[in-house]
Image 1 (cartoon, rainbow, N blue to C red):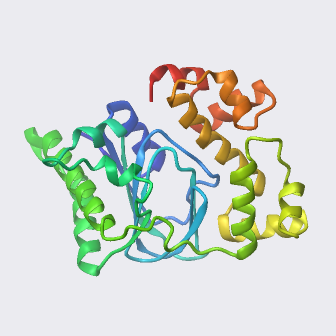
Image 2: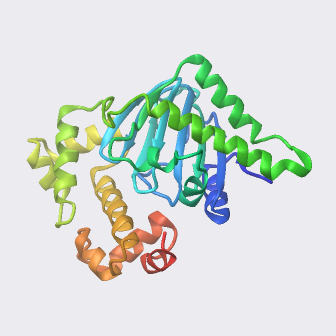
Length: 281
């Protein structure tokens, strides 16, 4: 059973296709360029290097021994420090895998979807080493018991991540942000359902569009408009999952042009919104 990949997109594809899990490891300083969402939850472990991680509406510091827990509705983007080795492990898990991996009365899904979940968790050296060992075990061959053994290892990663996250109850306790970017993201989150321009957002925080774009690039690794689109797509996925119509969702999320919504959603998620809605994800 192949579940360990050199490309993040392949790990996501495996997890989604099998409604299970897919692991990814890389030391390359070339993560996804855009704010993105996908249909799987994510456990992200940094073992070398650092930078910033935009998750939903906060930017977090990334450093060695830090773990992130992200659900499929949270738009995110990693911005590593330049010219450094950036070693990270990622486990993508389908929501149905999390729901099925129960341990007594405890469901790991609660650590991914609780309003008070800890998005960022600092680990000890021993905790980090244990997770690395578990990740690497997904790249071994266990013969006739391969699939069952790897599922157990993936469940151990999930359980450990949940155990570590339960130590921290404040979701945004470690958000690190430039004051103007913090205010700009807050303004976008309150107004994304309306027509919104970079000029308007910049004006709300007393900056020029050029100044705002420069700060977004530095702290979020993207442009203000790409963040706006990412926020809209994230909210669109939630509303479609609740059964709202594609047309209704398009206008609720600030897409005044239906065709633009279809294109933007398919580009970000990989399938049209109508198909996403009918799939019941």
